[in-house]
Length: 573
Image 1 (cartoon, rainbow, N blue to C red):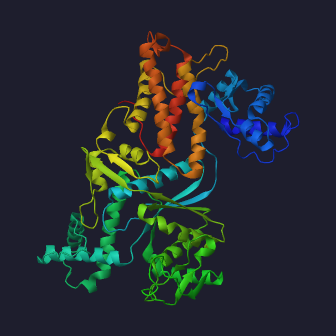
Image 2: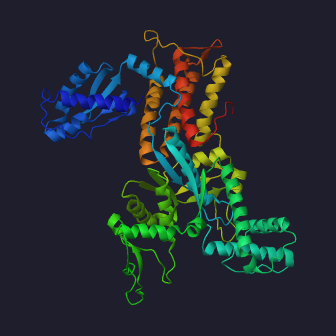
């Protein structure tokens, strides 16, 4: 149960019911009223700003209103045992012991505690790197973000498709296939690979060339144009195999792979443009020069234009290039029409740092195609900067000097990568230090969370118990100490974290919360080394049943949180 939502609903109902006794004229909008966890030094479970919000609306002193509302809360809500007025009018609330134990009992029975119930359909498109070689570290952040977002949405009961859009059409693919071809010529006919900036000189290209030669020993490769389609298919298959293997090493598996070539072969662009024309959202016209460009240098060419400005974009967008061929945007609009036609209620695109300016136009396209019935949410993952021994690692896919996923996994484990790639908000750059993520200290968040779970299991092994053992909740015999109350309050916050993260897709809140919870648990553990009243085990038995309650609560939350993150939980460390 989310006690914040539950008790906030009770408080709002009381405002309406008691508005006359509280002398409130304006109670129409209670949206600003919230229920949070108060600062730790207050030693209360909940904090509400209702008196401050209503005081301002009704021109009443918030503290005076809080004094009246305090009595209303204590009389009408049995679960509230104590209410205190703090600061300019905050109401700090302490839950009764029966309320604490009732909520704890519900948590212990709920294997998916924290789940924010929903039942919608999602298509999450992520990674979608050009199939021109293995994944590099620059792809890692978006890949893990997309996978964890899918886990979170499924944890909440949604149906999710994880999709990869294969950019297998266009100039980059031609350059890649030519690179493979020239490596074949180099290997088979001893002709030196040219020094051309448009080519891919990476070692993996040689590997793909050798594989194609080995599987087609008798084939004559000298004619590039004649063998192009065959080489394209073989090169792309080999490259996608590398990418899928890299994803697998990161614990990621997509449900669907969609080929850009299929858009061309199935004539999806023309079908999409026809639909948008019928809706009056596409017409022939002239674009204005881009901002900052002189009108003298701007070539005015009539072309098909999508009226994206009708849907919140900064300008209308061209669907055709100067030569009349389709733009990349036109192909992308067609791809999104296909997604809309597959009846997803929600589309999510995980984009790289260089795609920020693309969001408004593709969001406009989805709105136009679906008559505003399908929601597109685009999330940008900013750059990752790698450091080792205090020095930066640099990468360049075209030069063949990039840091691959396998290179990264040779340095650190999958669990460390997945956790740390989410440890900061996706919209800010992330520093990834190889040395720090391998430290076995408090400064390494993933280690500290895993260590909390391992400690719990070591404790249970020591007294021959398990997490499945039932605990009797007897109100008269249970008394929580200060450390235990801090942990309980933190555990109660978990559904609020899940709800907030699910609405805003700010996934960094999960690892951050798990680290905070684990830090409280480790402090609780260490307190026993300093004070015998806090000792966990006495004479080979658990000292108090409250300890069993706490370790079960912490274990439940850590298990659910790390399952969402796709990070393992070893029982021994």
